[in-house]
Length: 118
Image (cartoon, rainbow, N blue to C red):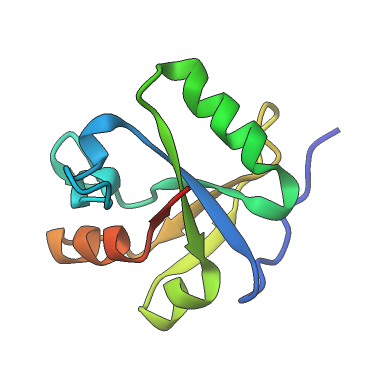
């Protein structure tokens, strides 16, 4: 049975998987976290926190390699900065969403600033 998309509320939070090259030496997130092949990823994937757990997000990130981390984003902060979030569940990930509005290197930097590393 297909999973129906949910409305994303301003009070919701999202998880973003981060690799080692997505982090600055001080542990903050850099713009690479929102690029695909060196260009802005127009729909970066995130997970809706209310449909998963930090442990599941971390386990999923660690399954890809030991240097993966998880970032936290506020939907309210994203929308206040001009982005939107759409729930796009898949058969294997009912929490899957995309962030819409990442069109320039400047928006990659903006998304990075909005991401807190867990």
